[in-house]
Length: 216
Image (cartoon, rainbow, N blue to C red; front, top):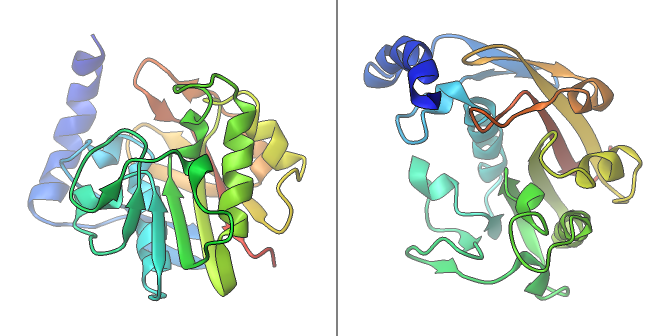
């Protein structure tokens, strides 16, 4: 049933992907980004349409890069350090994010739609482990470096309110909301984004919290 509901949006996005037409886009902090179209995971149907462009900009800083959750590999970005508890692949370390060395530092730390699963979809089952994961990643950024963590709203019932309440010090939390099916997103306050519900039927976010550091 889910597949049938996706057919119209899939067909609408496929020409952009095949022709590499990046028409359309979104604004975030005064910068214009093109939506990201890719057949892997049908990115125009979900939050990858905005997450990957933000991650690409962060990767452009260079230096030592850590990615938690093996996402960018599937879109051609390789050569940086990747930690993923379950997914196996070239250069991927299969360890729990909370088992990372707390003294290690990276110039860029990226996690795309991953920390919300910590403590929700793995053991031990404790959704507050997601908060601990963001806190650890924020502390793993070297001086002058950059943090980018995207969190689909409504997936982890503890993580969203913890981020809004400032339980992770030294970070800035912004929001993105999907305004229509397909790649239609706009920047919003974190409170507005957090009011969106998660679309469990199609396993996509209607709102994203974007965690960055250091806080400005």
